[in-house]
Length: 72
Image 1 (cartoon, rainbow, N blue to C red):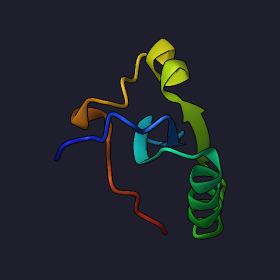
Image 2 (cartoon, rainbow, N blue to C red):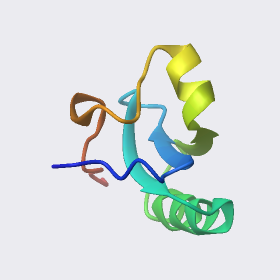
Image 3 (cartoon, rainbow, N blue to C red):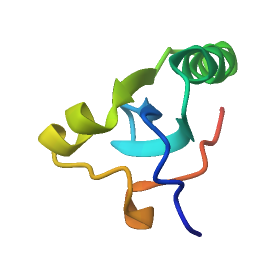
Image 4 (tube, one colour):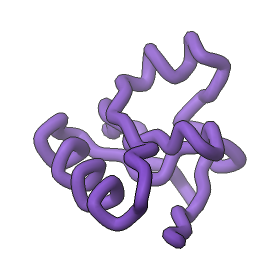
């Protein structure tokens, strides 16, 4: 999996501390986050910039920091 370097906004799962989606436009990331949060019992997804995630210790441009979300 190659991560698009043009992504500026990332949907991040607070439960797993991993990225579940990347987008060039904030509006697209927010729409994805809303869809994910609607699919789970407790909202656990947020939108962050790459800079914020890197400061948290999660480089969104490395594939080992990504996951596919699962919903219960």
